[in-house]
Amino acid sequence: MDINQLSQGLDTIWVVLTAAMILLMEGGFALLEAGFVRQKNAVSIIMKVFVDIAFGALVFYFIGFALMYGKDAGGILGISGFMMGGDLSHIQLNISHDTYWLFQCAFVIAVISIVSGAVAERINFRAYILYTIAMTGLIYPVAGHWVWAVGGWLGKLGMVDFAGSATIHALGGFSALAAAIFIGPRIGKYNKDGSANIVPPSNLPLASVGAFILWFGWFGFNSGSTLSATNASIGHIAVTTMLAAASGAACCILFTMFRYKKADPPMVINGALAGLVGITAGCAFVTDGAALLIGAVCGIAMVFATELLDGRQVDDPVGAFAVHGVSGSLGTLAVGLFATPELTSEIGKGYYGLFYGGGWNLLGVQALGLAVIIVWGFSISWVSLILINKVVKVRVSRDEELVGLDVGIHGVPAYSQDHDFIEITKLMEPAAKN
Image (cartoon, rainbow, N blue to C red; front, side, top):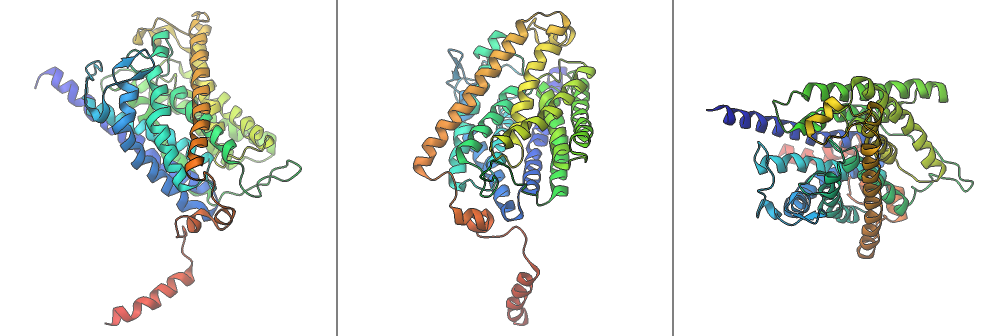
């Protein structure tokens, strides 16, 4: 085995393992969202995550990958690679196209999972399947092509988004905002005077475990985006990822103690996630100190964004917009401020941050790219929901919402009661005696 074969083998193992880490984040999304919503809607959350994985992977295989990474057509979208066939010779990597598809598939599944939390407890399951197809087959792939594909127009301008603060998180966050506004708040969430009622999470320990799994998976999300096991920046990426998450959580602990007189557990959970989202764009290009600052700003901004949505009566049960939309936007812009010449020189862009003497060029490109992605995600999600609503009602009926989606839609509760177990046992006794 020569050195090239060894390098390709190591890179393949690295990318497959990190793709698996990102896929494990779906378990984190499932636990986080199931813990944040009411008990009567926990099964609904799990079923939506299965939709994310199953339909997301299939649609991305048949359509999404081609539109995102196929041969470029005018910098707008790809036109080859449907079902991994056709001309993909322009993708020059040290790993196979199949390996690359697997890694990117894990990303697209994460995007749709962002939206699922914002519409929790009141979206029609059939409508959610259709929206998943729209997101994984069109909305995300087209935006991704602009930034990451060979020939994408934002990438050619010089936009830097290493692992997706804009392309994944801001896109998903603003799509989630559109969906939350379109579908409306949960019954009883807001009063006639505009005040909000607290809907207590069903299981905060469960949500915490979900956040820890997401935190773990994020090392695959960010470090895996090197697509190389021998890339010297892997360690630095992991460190900035860790510091931003810790800073986001720590600042939320202190800030909520000051603001609410108690450390607020849901805010702290989301504070860590906000730090992770914020560092995703620049994890390879900023210093440790910048990572700490980015995490802190994103964590505190998330608190204010959560309060702002409640004041506008936009019901987002898990804080998807505040975590992903706001922090993803801040993280994208932070690259234009904090990217260092030494680190950005590795990608050959020649751009670096304003605070390091790079001028306004990179910051301007980052702002333009972010604005375009936000408008695209919000508007196309809104149009998609309008069209879906003509086929099947996006929102469940009042009765289904009141009884809970677990029983109303899926016909089974998340947790069986003791008397249910006893009745089942009695029914099984005659069969056991025979």
